[in-house]
Amino acid sequence: MTQPVKLLRELIALPSVNPAFLAGHDALTGERHVADFLAFTADRAGLEIEFQKVFPSRPNLLARLTPPGKITQRIVLAPHMDTVGGTPEQFKPVVKNGRLYGRGACDTKGSVAAMFSALLAVAAKKQRPKQTEIIFAALVDEENAQTGSRALAASGFKADLAIVGEPTRLQVVTAHKGDFWWKLETRGRAAHGATPHLGKNAVHKMARVVDALETEYAAELRKRPRHPLLGHATVNVGTITGGRQPNIVPDRCEISIDRRTLPGETEAGVRREITALLRRCGVDAIIADTRGAPCLPMETDKNLPLLKQFLRSTGQRRPIGVDFFCDASVLSNDAGIPSLVFGPGDIAQAHTADEWISIRSLERGTAMLTKFLQSLP
Image (cartoon, rainbow, N blue to C red; front, side):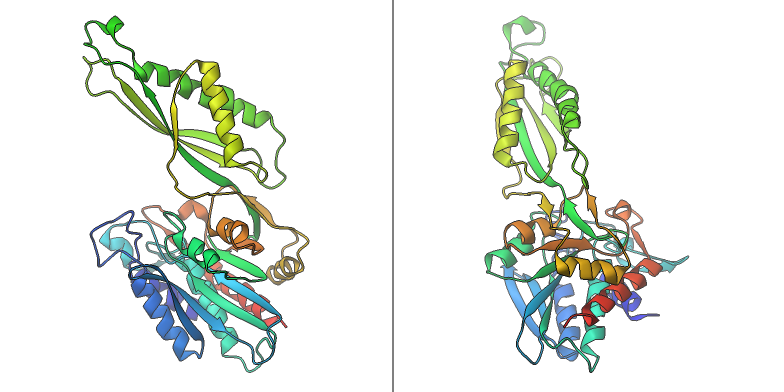
């Protein structure tokens, strides 16, 4: 069994469910057990260890391989340690038919295992980078509010390149969409269901809004110029709630929408678009942000020398874009660190009941990362 496979099995067996998904189950929630395990292993390998406080008992872990001479550049490897919830069986790693199954196998403990194994391999060599500091930053809370990466950015942390671990099928990603979550609420007047003319139906008002969002507004987004890597911006109505029982005219209705944004789009601009759509529908609605923190799109200059060097290490000619949002946005937009997304596994397997990662992908990803780190000056 190779080092990254062995490490990933151990990581899966250490549950680190984000408390947002499994509150009250202390044995399963939080990233502390994973952070302690990685810190112990890194310390034995001679790396410098730092726990960065984010939440009580949920710190980021920074493990540094510092060169002996003057530091001329800094590379950060940044996967996240938290996972979504799962059943007890999903925390028992299983190897079968060239796959490793378990919660977090691809999202993103596979990236943790690949990046950490690559760093340990470089640390074990006599010929290490002499001018480049390599930092493994295992982050908390990516699956909920990205509080770990936001804390790292707020601390003043700087680097010349961040490689953010996510399952990209080992493709180098230099752009991803932003993600705004909003709640829209309409209000009416309650009345008896036998005399609906005496009330104002909030659900009926919201129905006009839902139809306009999913048809008129979605069509408008598709008519706009495509982003070369990300395609079109999108909108989705994800939930709707209204009314209490059939014989009462509902006085309130609420929907939640997901608006995926492209580089160049702003929260203020999108809010103006939604407000204008409501006016065209003749509907007064309350708009509220349910994220609490900006989730902006990310795009890195394809001509960045370190990006080109990483592409050569992976044998790829050009980067791609993805629809999902991740910590790369925070490190890029908040910390000003040029960022890319890379890791073994397929996002299609993330959060699934039988989450798995290809062992071949895990080992290839580790080799690619090791080759890049060893090529640094």
